[in-house]
Image (cartoon, rainbow, N blue to C red):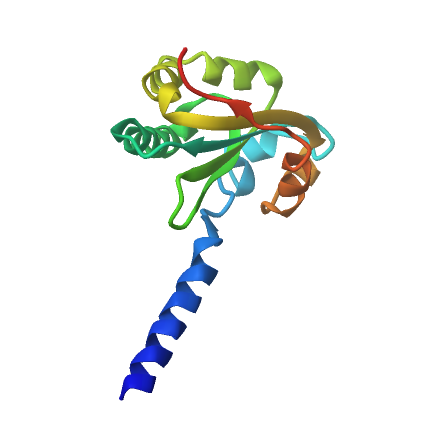
Length: 166
């Protein structure tokens, strides 16, 4: 009986250690990833902007607020002119998360970043970020990301910045 308990505890600990490194992401989706008025207006060779953010959060109430504000922004993101698609990803048992968005052009990305909803969310939650990194790049519409694999390779090249006080 004792060896069965020991085995079960070892098995559970092993499973937990595997899950600890797992990142879950929503599919990359949006009006530019399905038949829509937007997707029919964009030529396959038109350059679009991919924006990526990776944040590590502290364990404060503000960090929980950051996650809920991120979900709120993502839930309503299709209201933004020029939004093609995106995904949110988080690591299990961790305070790390990522966002990926694709935009028609740099102007529509800037308009979103300057929007009241995004600015308020950043102001209210910036202090909960212990580290963050972000970057954007241009790619032909036909080559827009379908998953995180290629984006992760680019992200590895971007150093973290310290978060905290504004």
